[in-house]
Image (cartoon, rainbow, N blue to C red; front, side):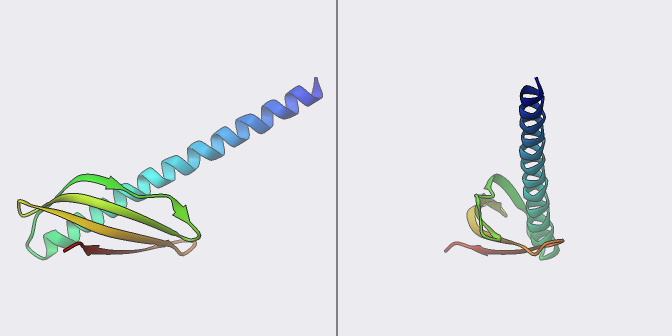
Length: 96
């Protein structure tokens, strides 16, 4: 019985940890989209995001792709997010 209880507690802990990470990545993706939209807005442009894939974390970086419309024109951005512990550094560049 103890083995079953221990295995059950471990399985539930792993499920909670996994779901916590997924939620964190979702919130991170939303913050990135919002930051990019706000940045373009501050430059007098309108960015409408149609698709954003944060990508998988490799080391301390995510490498993703954001697609959308900038003032009506189709655009694609390469997005690099560096996890700096308590903060994230976000860099993006529009593809030519």
